Image 1 (cartoon, rainbow, N blue to C red):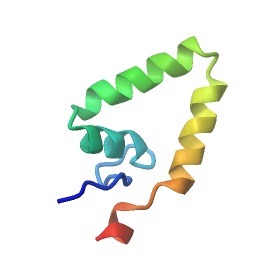
Image 2 (image 1 turned 180 degrees about the horizontal axis):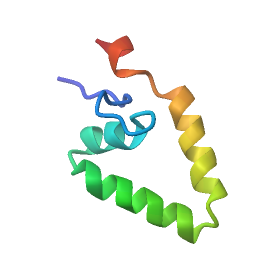
Image 3 (image 1 turned 90 degrees about the vertical axis):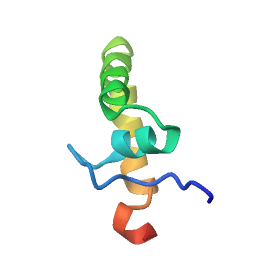
Image 4 (image 1 turned 60 degrees about the horizontal axis):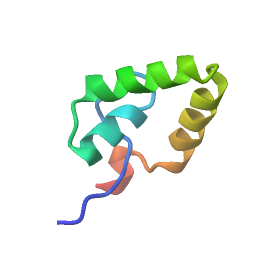
Length: 65
């Protein structure tokens, strides 16, 4: 079965980090913590912009089913 990158139904904001974690087979908490740390150490804005782009580009969980 081919895996698809999609936003997850396990959402905190838009399900982007959870979708990435499910796609890579990682724990959701680890992906969220890594995202927050990368955002803080990159002055915040690049991480926020990437998250917003992914929120609009990645299909929603319900659209893929």
